[in-house]
Image (cartoon, rainbow, N blue to C red):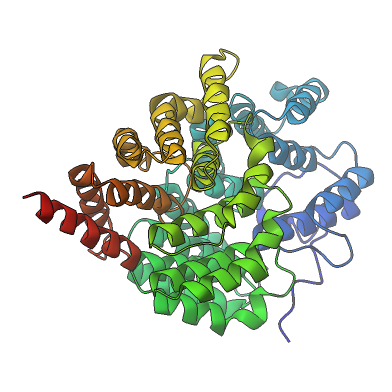
Amino acid sequence: MVKFREHFRDLSGWKESGLHLGTTSNEAVKLYDIALDQLVYYYNHPIHGGLFSTLLKMREADPDFLSGELLIVSLKLFVTDNPEGRREFDRLCVRFPIEEQHPWHQAHMRAAMCLYKEDLKGAVETYADISRKWPGDLHGFNLGYILGLVTGMSRYMRDIPLSVISHYNKPHNPHYGLIHGKLCFGYAEMGEYDEAEKAGRKALEIFPLDSWALHAMAHTYENMVAPEKVVSVIEEFEPYWTRGVNFTHHIHWHKAGAHVQLGQHDTALGIYDAEIIGQARGGDSFPLSDASSLLMRITADGVGTGGREKELVPLWSEHKTAFTSLFYDGHIAFTSALAGDVEGVGELARNMEGYIGNTARSGWNKDATEQFGPDLVAGCQEMARGDYEKAASALARSVPEMVKVIHGSKAQKSVFSVLLAHCAVVSGSGVEEAMDHLEWVRRDNKAGALAPLQQRLWNKLSNHHHDKK
């Protein structure tokens, strides 16, 4: 039976990595290895109890282990505007003056400073440089890779794995298949579907428990407009990705979304009830966005959700002041709109105005929010009021350019294209703008086609267009 790793690297085992770890503690570096393995494979170690529990044990083994301390603080700073992470980084810089550290540690400290300042694009570029210089560094590799997704700078999801692949392409390397799974997603986001499929299949052949590789294959087939293949590959590897992986809700979301594309809405809602809403009730933005996005797509397809969106509105409430991602703020807005919560969208709009005016906050997300957020939220507020004509007008001023720059994969961000088209279909207004945007979506996809739901919306918009002539 395929298992997650049971043996982890001590000081001698780390020598091949070429990294200056900066500790003499075998226990600390083993726990560092366990933490990194959990980070890149999205599982909880059965003995050490999850990523942050492992990191605390690592700190106990050697409180002065700078590589470990940098991993801890960077993960905290990854959640932008995190006061605890900022304080911890301030203390770290006092304890370990940057000019006295190894060049690898200096580079990580510069990357963490970018996160501290909410300069996510600067962080991506710094981590990409770390991967080129120190390819055995999974910490820098994974944060740079995920930040490529978070910032919409998708080329880094391909280019960072390509920059390190020769280091890992050795059967004895414990992460031999991992890089291929990461590369699969990067290729898929860049429209290089043949390469994506080959890389994903190789990763799963080497290590079927690589849930990211399976998830990347789902993205590949979704981008290729092949929802039946999304369902098929997820079901093929179900014995593996359901074994203790901590983002199974998102794989279920992909499967449910494929059923929506196939017009199988009852099946999609069944998956929502059984697998998605439970995770969303925990209140984290990621599973909440999956839940909201699925209901938005079903609604746009002209099918009722039974009022399920009303449960999500209070779950999103604690995120209305965070402003870490316009992607998530957009989900808050349209979820409230689906529920008819006019005041809830209004509260988000007022908070957003404060965020835009707050000179203490800066960075990539603030720039995107200032440019696109007010119209996005205004459109959702009009939708909540039932004025779909005004909603379509406001959304047409934000969505077409916004989806090119915000957080998320093509599959995730497509919900905003669906939102715009839905409002235009319901109102019969803004039809040409919505059709122009969907035509851009079609051209942007190297498969040269719209997803079935988008195509159905296009057909309805086209009928409106012809009726006006």
